[in-house]
Length: 241
Length: 203
Image (cartoon, rainbow over all chains, first blue to last red; front, top):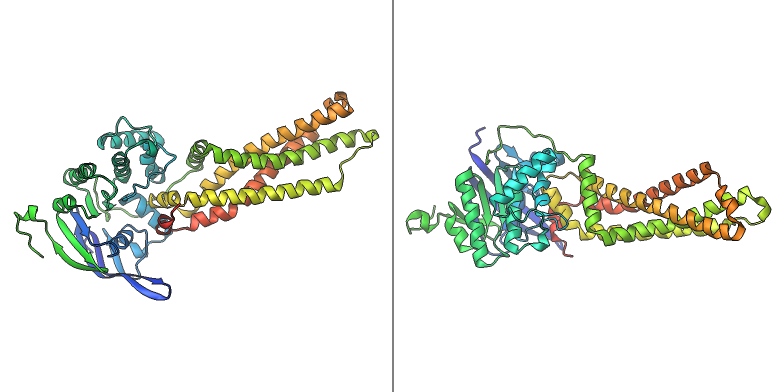
């Protein structure tokens, strides 16, 4: 088997049973995302974006079909392997930041490294370095409540990068931020993608974020509606694939 | 950075006792009000029990005083300990519920179920031990003071150390047992929850 893709899904479906009726949150999803690609996933709320994220990130199991991240079939992993996968391979960024409120920025960023078995000195150095990278070198010992929303999201980005993940999964990372702060976050993610070659997959409504991406996947009612390349990258002629 | 999967096999996930201890300590320190309530609850139950055991040591030494600890008093102590377990279970359940999102996050970052369990157990053990020691001190000092005034301090000072030590040991063990039994259910529930479910909880 060749490992050409960062993420590949095969006939992926996820159904829920809600009050006796079966709801198809996702159906027949066939995706191929290259390594180092910056992909935006766009769709109205309830279209299945978050479900897709949870499946790619190993937070949920598919009802049908398969998800490959690299050469790993996530559905085949047991609890231990799944924990390792979440820890080492995926960096999660959430709309609501999801930092641990009782820990400082530094401790929040260091947390995933504990599970990766990084010794505490090294952990401290790397967390400091990452927080400097996101421009929070002077906020190391602040708690999340002492930071602005934009700063909290930057701490979350630093945390997502802690174990050098293969993929950064961002679920509406700018959804809770004002326009300007949101743009700064988008620019930063793009920079990471360009410079470090991190694969970024982001669900978003943010037009700027859509414009910056290599590819946009439109989702509606649990299915891929279309895949487009943003106009900026196409010299203003958006072409549908 | 940005190396894909494929080159390596599944590695280790780690969470040593030391890390759990550090994290628990931070949690207790920064949620000190709640921790204090739990410690005081355990402490009160243990203090009552220690009061009775210390007093009974005096009376066994000095049968001539004609005073003794009635069985009903031990019943009272037993019931107060039961209440203590119930109230700590309650407060732990709330604490876990409040932190369900946090638990979900930690699981996203690579924690296994048993790591979550470990975290809660270490936390409850630290609080129980503090409660146990404080309870022992309060209970025994109160008993010594009260019976010292009543029966004379000369006999209180002659209390056999071995028995006092035994009483200390049983207080701490009792506190540990209370804390642990109260944590089992909430911690187990917390450890089992999937991150996706945990994120849906709104507190």
